[in-house]
Image 1 (cartoon, rainbow, N blue to C red):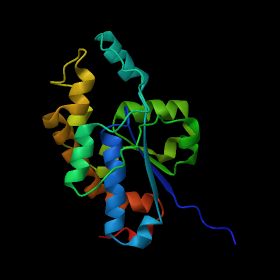
Image 2 (cartoon, rainbow, N blue to C red; image 1 turned 135 degrees about the vertical axis):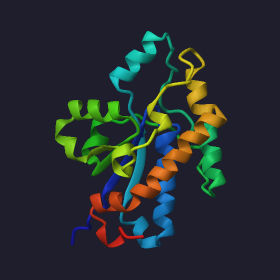
Image 3 (cartoon, rainbow, N blue to C red; image 1 turned 180 degrees about the horizontal axis):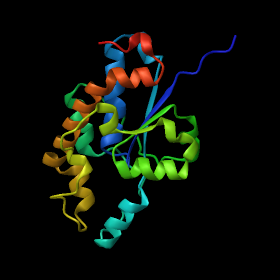
Image 4 (tube, rainbow, N blue to C red; image 1 turned 180 degrees about the vertical axis):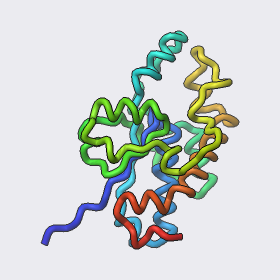
Length: 199
């Protein structure tokens, strides 16, 4: 008898060091809190994807790009934020880039930025029905700090600021947590895990 493959949920941000790994580990914990069985019903991962519009915006501001861009440890601010919530991440964890095979394997992809969704749909039109933004899944109408670069220094301190500035990262991750809590039942429904979708 063939074993049913659990649906695969992928969270996507730019470098896979702050928003998407935070979402991955927090969502996995939310699943665990609702029962060990639910953890086996959904596969959760995360990856990074930098859309060309975003790349061009930073390049136009002469913001340099770290090398390597992926295969990096989790941002310490993110690791600390997860630890505050009782979630321990292995020191061996490394960021990864979203690739075509991951897109094909995913049952649902949640992007941090609208530009990511837009470009991913252009690159992978067959995946259109399974790509949503954080704003869409959480049904948020208000301001989302991680969608806007207002106040973020567009110079060579950019990456340190958005990944390691405690005040900025704390606001971003607090928003992500609120969004995930709001979206949790609907995410499970979209993944076909309907029997667990009620609080």
